[in-house]
Image 1 (cartoon, rainbow, N blue to C red):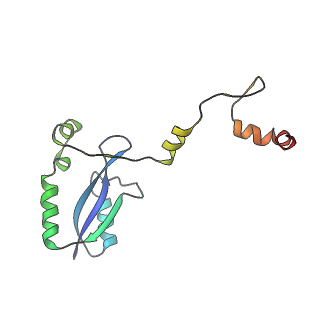
Image 2: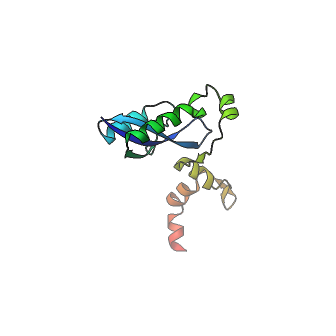
Image 3: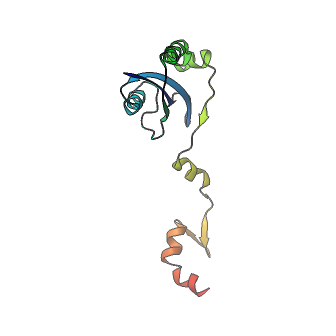
Length: 135
């Protein structure tokens, strides 16, 4: 068995936020260590980029990481009130494509003459194609 240091994105710190945590894992390969880390509690399991990095480490570093995680209040909290009271968390914000689309969406109503258009892109592609070429 080899010893690995795996940095992962952990959740339960707010919507669209995460916190990086480092786990000490014993496994036969780096892929197996990453798979074990992904299945651990509080990790954002379904994120493609949940595993930040995997490094092979010494036994001293392994013991140090195990002690740090055992003493970390983030892993011992049972509810959000404990987490707010005990943890001083530096969270990072993550944005998905859906969030960016929602932020950049233009919510203004579109009109053609005095007629309101529900889907302007579809309308102009299907109905205004000839006029756009004529102009």
